[in-house]
Image (cartoon, rainbow, N blue to C red; front, side):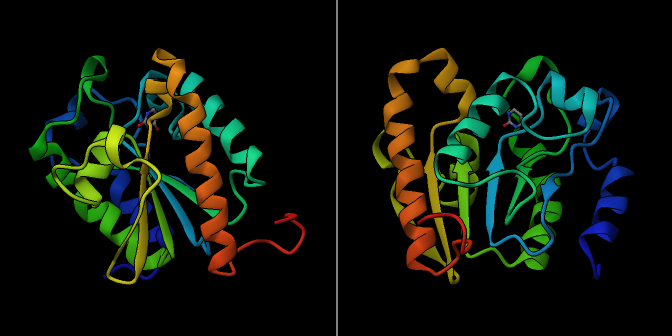
Length: 194
Ligand code: URA
């Protein structure tokens, strides 16, 4: 069992457990603080992420940064950002079940080492994988579920918000609910103004 995120990352960068390794430019392992207590999980890398090796750096990522800033969170400080699959599905198709299953041990290791108190699922794929296979974002977004001592919440995927801006208000409310949960659990930075 790996002792650090760095060790897991090194092993993940050489992964060839599913067909996505054939078409990837970079493995997008994840970024953030090693002591992060809030973990955001997306679906899988897109074109920009595949090019750079960083999660959520495209237009969706810029929107995510805005929502994070709205509740006084920022990349690299007290949060970690990862994906269900670490390699880009061709043409940004949904990752297949077997690809998600092949990639799951990496996320499991990230969760084991980070021990997050809160996991925010960005979009249906992450919420159905981590919360419940029949999770419906439109019905259940913003609701917190407790599982093995961790609070999980699903919200809209930033790319879905770019396609359907009418849902942006709901997503903002979900981030405000996240801010309340962070405060309730005593995870807020002292200077964050919660
Ligand atoms: N969409 C995701 O789900 N993850 C990323 O890292 C980028 C876009």
